[in-house]
Length: 520
Image (cartoon, rainbow, N blue to C red):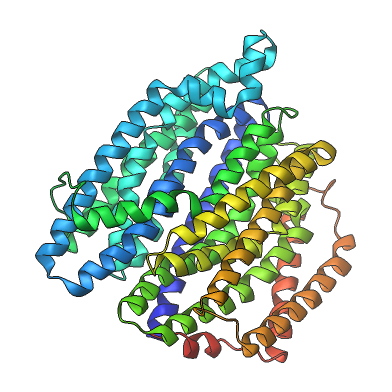
């Protein structure tokens, strides 16, 4: 089972890497077309709201509530009952998100005024910035239906993940990136504002992702006719678990949305700088944190259903070690190489050196919370696999309140960088609260061996960071050509990987540790 779990993690991580690479290519295209100007701010805003709802319905609360119940039904019932359960959940979810999509399209102006209040106030006062409000309202009408398609896509992916078929769901986001890139390339010149081409790319991407999943669902024997099942006992269980999970599992996304609200009052470019830096943060977060969380939830759910408490704890320990091994050095490298990364990946066209510098500052602030964001991805599923959604909600409320407090305190002296730092601090608070509760419940304690292991990871990371900092002055990224920048960045990354790998090996960290620890 350990090898299967690690293999599943590698598959999801590989597919996620492909998605993230195409995501970066997509962002390069966007940066080249729009840079960090007003139109870029508006597109990122119009894309962020449906993307936020996607995290809640498709990848966040719904998956965390649905997978444990589906696992329970699948383990205890026959195939016909499983099909009936899937049919009722798909029908109920489909109708709800369809209504949500319609309301979002019709109320796009209200949503824009609510989450882009700074633009709305400028619009009421006939200020030039008010044009952002009008453009955002139009773009949101195009991007908001994405929530319908991606929610059903997430539903299909959750079913496949429960059946240990992880590759399909992990590959699916690639199609969204391809859609946006294709629309940017072929349609941008057809609109007076290129942002409309990108918005249609989001819409088309949602349709394509859903259609891609259906044949695999059919092959698994679970492509069934949807039907309304609001009062079905198992559907009631899912929605009972989902309602609090809507908040608890998506605290970081709510925080990012609140950042957007506050950033709309800051200087033009603030939303874009936060977006570009968050995109680079999402690369290791998706590659390691989300990938491990994806494969660990069905396993933890089975451990809980089968009352294998020791295996439950060991699997959490396995996830913690793997995330720390990858996440700690990734955070350090992102912090040190923030400016070179921004220059190499984005700096072209409308994305200037100054834009790269501004975005690198918020990236450095975000990286201070990267490990915490990853830990939340595995600690929260520990509760949801036990069908406990209320505990994370209490901490989610505390975390969001803390984030708002730090936003207000840090945004005054540090602007948009303060918003990124506040998100990192609140993420760390969330991770600490979740772990403390797991420990109090006796569900999971970090063992002495794991603490010792974490110490070795930190030491290897310090050695890697020292080498990178010592080597950085040899490269002039600000004034050099793209080829020179790329060569310099590749050299630093290779040097960092080599230093960390050698240091970890000398300190006794071995790949076999991740194969032997996980349990069925």
